[in-house]
Image (cartoon, rainbow, N blue to C red):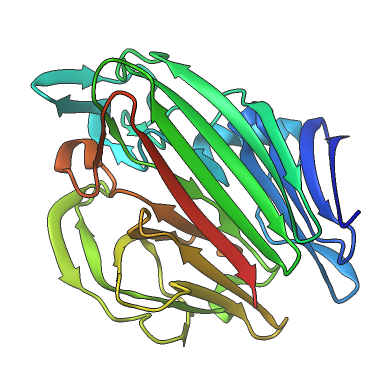
Amino acid sequence: MSFTIHQLHQDGLDITEIKNNKNASSVQILPSSGALWHGWIIRHQNEDLNLLNHYKDKSDLQSNLSDSYKNAKLNPFACRIPEGKYSFQGKEYEFARKFKDGSAIHGLLFNQPFEQERITQNDEQASVSFHYGYRKDDPGFPFDYDCTITYTLHSNNEVSLETKVRNIGTATMPLVDGWHPYFTTGSQVDDCFLMFAADQIVEFDEKLIPTGKLLPYDTFLKERKIGNIELDNSFIVSKEAAQPKCIFTDKVKNIKLAIYPSDNYPIIQLYIPPDRKSIAIESLSGAPDAFNNGIGLILLKPGEEKVFAVTYKIL
């Protein structure tokens, strides 16, 4: 068979792996930790290279997941909601789970146990789906919905992530979905190149909360070296621009990563951590604090389903 799907217990972690037996590439998922994207491993210069800045072991995951949120699923909101408070349809809500700065951050599913639901495969690709049923888990989000995440490894160094959210409750719910992958080639980000198809930046205040203004931005419309540029910003993806919407390139190692978000991910968030050894390239359906500012906010009615998709490919 072209693909193998199996379970690993490695470094204290229970991992589901999709492996391409022809080129030795693989995708690794941590179902018990929010169906987190743990690994995208390719063969490069006769060695395995994980393109994700991943957690080294169980201790690292337990200590740092709720601080870094590396590679996590962001749902039902992304980024920060100041003080964890928002207004929705005439009611005030406040999340019980908060970050150390007092804000609610990156959703409610990042550490929840997902159950494996479905496996499909053929000669060209293999997929695994994981499901979590959210049932008013946090008083700040008193809604019921199902979230299904499907990972697909293709035969051509391509990975697709699909997220389905279905409102199974009786009330309309606010929704933002996204991903938080930290990509690395092993090189310093400063020496790599970046291009993304966005000509507007979301203006932030000093707490990284949108002011409501969109400002012109063209720094990376054409490929350029990242150098010492600092990034922790949201950008509006151009609908008219051709895919891929973002390309991250390590020219020394000859690695080019292309990102193809669907129209349901109209925002790209970019963050370079202080060590500058990786870059978070986040596909988002809405802006930070969308529950309050409404930028990209989805209103999901009872019985409705929304699908979000993004594909990553090594060119």
